[in-house]
Image (cartoon, rainbow, N blue to C red; front, top):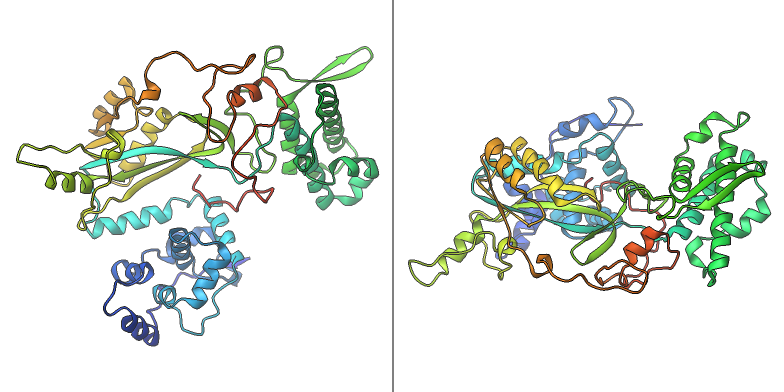
Length: 478
């Protein structure tokens, strides 16, 4: 058990201060040095105390781990590289108040810290503290203009079709039970036979080419899965086995992809078909046994498995700069050009830079309009409500525009309709598939084909991930 006793951050060691000042006397100091000089102890340990025990082995300062995480993400470093930067870089030692001979910490401390932060609901604490400090510096505040748009986040798991999902869910459950109760599992299954089917990842070998063999394999996965779940729920099985997460995931995957009918001759298992049996809505449908929050979603011409992140930022600096570049007294600039008109980049004002004011992450199925009210509430909680809020055309509706003006005093300004949003003839797809646009990652109508229960693999230009499991929690905010 790790404990934390909140303490003020130590000042940078004099030898490090002298070295940094000498190295950057005539050039801009690194980000880490600027953060310590201008913002000071921006993440106090006391703000993260609730995530740690009061007694136990002393742990590393959570406030300084938060700063390491920020610097790590700013430079796109892995955990190992970030831990090594703490030991090697003078600028990071300056920011963290470390001595030259400080050994730092093991790289696994970072993932453990992120997991604790998420587990205790502190994932927004870093952004809240940083924004509060920037408000004190006069770099951000209420009023003015802000813009919001969303983008996709691909889950760190392999894309699986329904056949692969069923087989991999059985394999994942076997792996979990083999680690938790190997003595029990050996007495329940035929180890040699099951090992031939589930010793390697299901998507690491070529699936049968004929539909008949694919259907036979799908039913074999289902029978094995049902047998494994039923064994976990038998009266003579340890009660805690059914609470293993992989068992519950397999149970849901079987429910969403198969049906069981009890007849006079026994129990019949069949694949669930969209037209005959119905499939669960996309927001409930599991897409991986290793990341149960990821969902298949689409936006415009992009189709992906994972999440959607909504980013809000100030944009007064761009308006002020473009206004100064106008040709004449009557020239007017488009506010927040990247949202409203897609114009080119402009210089940022050094006095009031564009700053992110809110980050919200959802699964890929949540529409943008469902987040408009939540974003306004988050900005209101931080005291950073804008006077004008420019959003992509997916966020507003007549009701939301009226509610924003009445409840928050915000002018909600939608962006113009793009060509892809204008009415027109629907795109055509292959015979038997509902129309769907071609994307960079999928062939036409892959989403519709998957929903109908197709077992064909979707061609992709992105190489599959090297790992089965997603990165540790809080790599992206949830």
